[in-house]
Length: 626
Image (tube, rainbow, N blue to C red):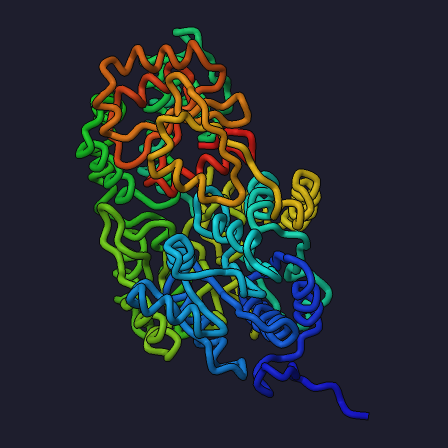
């Protein structure tokens, strides 16, 4: 009797390329037959499962397969993996750098494709790509399938047009709560969820030991004094609100404050709104002082000064803040206490492969400056692409840094969130969390960089205060993820029609006849899943479910309205659920203020295509989400 092979044997998979792990084979078999979300910690072989499902679907059903990843570096990584493992020549990387006409040819002639979702969505909309003959779509980092992210529309297009559709969704964690998890499952038409954690019996044999060490970092007396000054400022402002008849109570988190801020804006209570906005900013400064240090907090204050909004000026004129600035300037002369602890840890583990995570780019470079002075330590920094006011790295620079780290040119990689998601990195000896994150997704992704092939360690530097709470919250969310997933799946199944019926389901939108020649109406009419009824509607352009009344406004249309105040007030008076949908780059503070004060829903879209998707989403869900 022949010994079971240590590697996967399949007509479309090269011999000796994929280790035969039972849990991966079970998941792949189930995912081949039902739309499945696979939830696995980083390093447990989500890509191997995807390759097995691709091979199975193409061998059994023919057609084409498409694998999508959020970024170009991730897409390139998957493309290389597929070419290395599969016995198929037509494996194509499709990027936006390829000429559109050439892309159309590629989509027609290839068999397996790897691309970013932005390229796929654009090409579907422009008629360059038809998903009809695809027998599998793989959505990597599937937790992104919320809101207006391209994954949502791609799944919708695919399910409605494909002859033999199958969806495979991959993620380390699908979301932080049941509501967001349900949204992802619903958006990707998921029928089955496969979850494995480090504790799963069929996974444990393939993992090494992982030690978690929490290091409490006491703040210096000077930091304590600055933070106490800020807390006094918060107490003073809470007392001021209480005198105005508004009691926040003893315990109020950032989430509660943001909800209160939204209500005050809607009610037009400007003075209270200004005070609550100041409390939110002061709380943020406290968090920065505890977790990052005086340098980041000082930069934040400078940004507020530069921005010059009315609420920012009020805060900067506050006596507490005026006292804080010289204290921060004094603290800038010495590093945050975490830096001393970090240096000791790196010295102790000098020569071992380490990854350090931080939430802020400036902190990443401060850590780099510190570690560069230690003999035997070769650090490098990995950050995301350029933001509005921040320097960033191009994808080519990121790729070079990763290659040099993998080759051993560096032994410490200091990374912001860009290093959490998907990148194929070697197993680390140590992952050091310079600051905590309350996000269960990011917590799982960070820890997944260690303890796979060989024993590893996660070291978390936690300042006393909120950061301890953040770490506990993220750990709790990780433990509860499997339970939340199962509940979310049952909720998702209960709230949606069977897959075949969903494909046929049509929604109804009433359109004012004056809109019929416009781009939005034309796009809606072209949709097979939308039933259009033309009618005369006063003051609005679209009616959804006979209760949601939408007025679409562009910058040009706003300029033609003689009295925007009167128009919005009449809208509020006439309709139970009016919605203003601003399309394009509309800048009109008066509209933002009035819709908020009148309780009119406000939606923003980029262009007519985005408007159509938003209208359809509202029609399908029957609710308005910002």
